[in-house]
Amino acid sequence: MPKIKPRFIKIHGTLNGICMYPLNGVYIARKSSAPTKEQIKNDPRFATVKANTQEFGGASILSKAICTGLQHNVQSFKDSYFTSRLSGVCRKIIQKGSGGPGQREAHLLNHKQALLSFQLHKNYIFNQIFTAEPAILINTERNNITIKIPKSTPNNLKYYPKSATHFTLTAAISLISAHNWHPESQKYHPKHPETNGLGATITTEPLLCKIEHQNIILELKNDYYSQPQGAATTVWLGITFGQKENNQFIPLQTARAMECIGIY
Image (tube, rainbow, N blue to C red; front, side, top):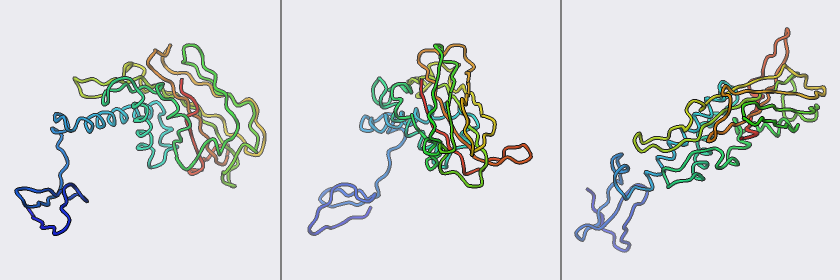
């Protein structure tokens, strides 16, 4: 173990990963080490680290449930940092839940604002690319969601490739149960596993970019008859630009965006 002999400054602490402290009148320098898994689990000194670790795990589980409901849309619209960005949002949601640190409820309805307007691709902002205002209609059981766009004009389409001739709109829902911490398994588990991660998606026919469209309607139903209390439905809307060739829509891979437009 290296020893140091400071003449003017006696350092006691950690600097750039090197821990320095006095021992029997001599200053010692050693590489600081991270706490072990057992220390984090059982040592009261690491209670905050333990709580943060548990909630980060809960955020990852909540994020995975959202992705499961979104189905293939995640792969179609996401960026390379999507997973970490969504987990970060889910952690903020958990921090608003009831309970003590490390065991707080993970429920989207506790902090809807954190997820609203979340973009699947951080560089392609849906509401800046498609500026028409969608209206969301939802029934009492919250299992039938209709997205209606009264009018879309060429002026509502922004920042898309000049080569694009058509666009499609994609609506998706993802049903997410509240999650609670279970001491026995040391994990977060869904309160309603039978509904957690259910989803549905629908896409319009290709629409010409250069003309006006009225009363665009996308209707979605989840697979559960009545959404239980302690669950939330996230509603997403996306756009994809492309070309129509031989009566087939050919999407342009970099000309697409999707965002969360509602949580119920």
